[in-house]
Image (cartoon, rainbow, N blue to C red; front, side, top):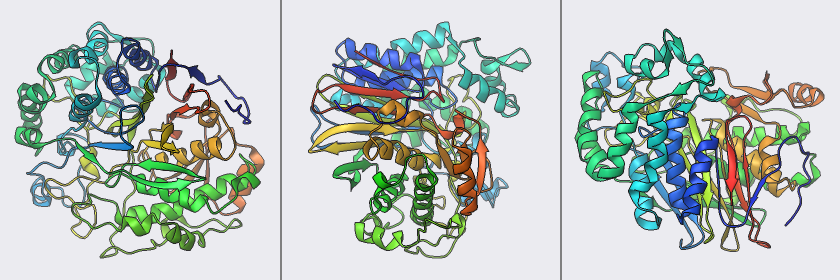
Length: 553
């Protein structure tokens, strides 16, 4: 097993021989690893981890959101991709929103933002039916216990409750969960969610289809939302099915990197790698001005194409073969100068789509986690309610926060991501998986809207080009280019741990530099699992910017 060459800034990676789980919350990782020890598969462990995150990390995960999975190794033939993202309701038309007084933009919060079907739970069902080894009901035991008896509020959750307090207190049900009297709950408080516990118990007993999508939950969830103006109906949930899709990929330094296809922004993550492959990163000092400048410039170029094209491929014919080709990357790479920064918003896409409509950049809050088992199966999975606390409401007595993913649809008829009934919106969340000689060797990803392709590039280059172990690749100083968390300016947020002279040099090259505190959660909560082919050992890492850890055995 190769030793890392990166600087040691914190904890070592977790090494495990038989199975491992990493997530942004320690209780979720522990529950997932316990499922592996009971004989569960990596899929079982991933679902258990997700159910606990829905309880312990409700600002970034939940039954009301979507998820995506990449699976390889063990019984999996090649690489399989599962898409569990719900479409817009059948009644969600541009005319519906115009009649509700919204012609320019869909509201970002509230019931009108809850217009897409929650897809994650059916994704769990689909993956479990194919690769699960534990009984379905056993996957919810830990989450039910924590929701019913309480889970300690961690620093990340407390910070986000405080940040979103003005939003949360406008809905009585969500305020009751996250309030301590008239104030937001603080770190160390015991968070009980009895309504969510009841929903989890019924889901465990009644199944994803019988209870959640075609039964009592679907009726209660959509009826409560409809009362507040949402176009979502029970039939929309009944009609939905998660689906297996063909993943997209590119090669990087002799390895094959996989992503989900559109409507996710996985294509942008692959384009960034194609652009970077034309540079010898080993000749560029990691952590120097050239390193940050180069990757940020590649991001700007890739994002121009992403913002031009990305939407539901069922509604727009996206030229993926061209956009992901090495020849196209060679052409686009000529835009990058090591001396001067591009004006990101002004970068033209290499291919045009229809009218030159104004594009918008995504934001979002998410959980990325991964699991690997004794059979060699590796699952790279990401799940999200979109913004922190999704739509900012709880649907009736279900205890479930509906996602606000549909608020990213455009109401401009000429926009590629324009709202249509049954359409899936541009999705920020992207799990990644690396294969070498047909075997999975790295699962990695992060939360954070615009930051996801960027942090993925940071983690992958630090591991492959610079020899970092996974924990060091995650802990190394990061950046975030673009608009996120309600910020309108496309600045380049640099973590304060980056050397002052590096920051100064980036500013001199024209980068729109802004300084972000060290270990700031807005830079994402990354996680990764690597498999060493020479020893078979797993190496896991989790982000100290969140509340997570890797746990193995």
